[in-house]
Structure formats: C-alpha cells, structure tokens
Image (cartoon, rainbow, N blue to C red):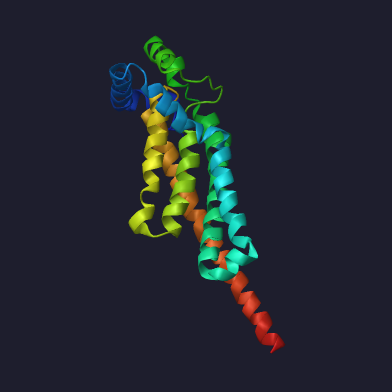
Length: 222
C-alpha cells in the first residue's frame, strides 16, 4: 500500500511559509491592538464551540417553519427553510465524522501552540484555549462552513454570500488564537463546503420524492 501523502510532517514542511506568514501577521495584529483583538476573536470562535450554536440555528430552521400558522402563510418558503436547516444539520454531522473522527486521527498534526516555543508564546498572549484533539483540519471551520454554505445555497445569492464572511472570521479567529494553522482552515472549508453540497442534494431529492408520493396518494383517492 502506498504511503499516505497527507501527513503532519508533509503539511508542516510544504506549507511552512504560507502558515507562518499568516500566523505572524495575526500576531502582529494582536500586538498593534494591545491584544484587545483577543476579545473579538474569542467571541467569534465561541460560536462554533462544540458545534452547539450552529446546530441550534439549524434546528430552529427545521422546527419554526413547521408551526402551522407560519407554514400555511408561505408553504414554499417554509419548505426551503426546512431543507436549509436539515441540510445544515446533517452537513455539520457529516463534517464532524470526516474531520474529527477520521482525518484528524490519521494525519495527527499537533496544534501550533504545541509545535514551537514561539507559537506557544503567541498562544499565551492571545489567550488561546487548550484542545486535546489534533489540528488538521479545523473542526470549528468545518462546522461553520457546513452551516453557512447551506444558507448560501438555499437563499438569495445576492445576500446569502455574506454568510461566508463569518466563515472567514471563524478561520481567522482560530489562527489568531494559535489553535490552528491556515492550512487547517482551508481543509475545514473544503470539507464543510462539500458536506453541505452533498446534504443539500440529498434533502432536495428526499423532499421531491415525498411530494411525489403524496401526489400519487391523492390521485389514487380521487
């Protein structure tokens, strides 16, 4: 069996310049703000801690449109919101399985603050958290990208693209806090985005089949 190319050592060596440049720039931002930026980035990262906020948001999109008074007002819009919630919820779950239960353990990349004394010092100044899981890819970013991509897909693209701003902020927060390398963020974005596309396709197909079955049942009765 050929040796796995995607390893921690390969990532560290191949993308050192890219990762180090961004981490250094974000540390410089912290210095320039007297580390007041700590509060902002810790606030941003809190939205994906454990995935609870994102899952709750998706659950609300599933349940609230099911309220009869809301659903009857605009059934098509309600169904679209429900599909968005279902797709986002399942995309987060799928992304977690791929990221936390599979790739992290296989690649086994240690986090920046554990890798070098310099990054550890920056981590202390940024007041980052301790995390026992491996670094690649970023679970926070995977979760956020999964939810935000579902929103982008299901709603008006003229406005829904702004959901990706939150993905960028989430990624920057993980880098600023020295919890992840920038390449970890890119990995999370790819996994979260692909998961959301797949789950959106699944739920659109599922709802179409449900509608067809209902129509067939009505036709049989008539």
